[in-house]
Length: 134
Image (cartoon, rainbow, N blue to C red; front, side, top):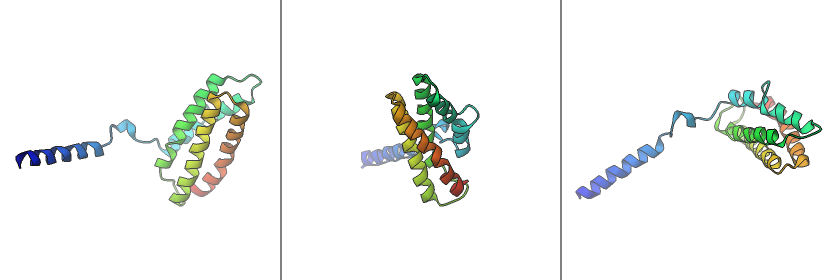
């Protein structure tokens, strides 16, 4: 009986520890932080856009910033928008993250046409999200 009680206590402790966040760094960046990093003055969106329009493509830079785009956009859904329906937010943020991932994949393959097509979709997605959630 004593072993059973010890086992239950140990399992309870494991459950509590697993429920805690691994660290403060695991917190998702805010919507504002994500947007500043992606669409700010030297944000990844601008770098990728200019790079895709260049005569000679710097695929290393495009791939680097497309990866940043994908990583940050994947965190959007973890946030709650200032206004609007959460289900609509989830749908739009998931689509945005999916396109950002596709951009990163196209950049890794050095596929200019696919990267430009996905980038165009990402640019078009801004209005719908801002109109409903900003």
